[in-house]
Image 1 (cartoon, rainbow, N blue to C red):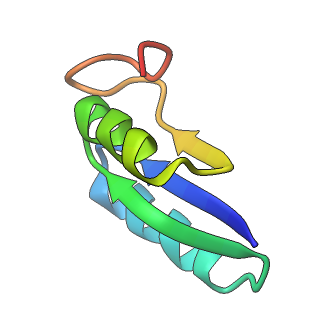
Image 2: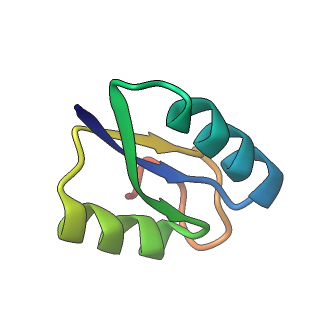
Length: 65
């Protein structure tokens, strides 16, 4: 099982990605985040295999996270 965290400040994008990955049996969405800070907290807590991250977010860009 590939553990994912999804992060995007646009709720519709985040929900679409979450629905897409939840349909796949090999992926598990362990957390979602709408800010860079929340994404960083989720990574520290869940230690995902993959982080799908928006590059531009209001509280810091995706490269900062």
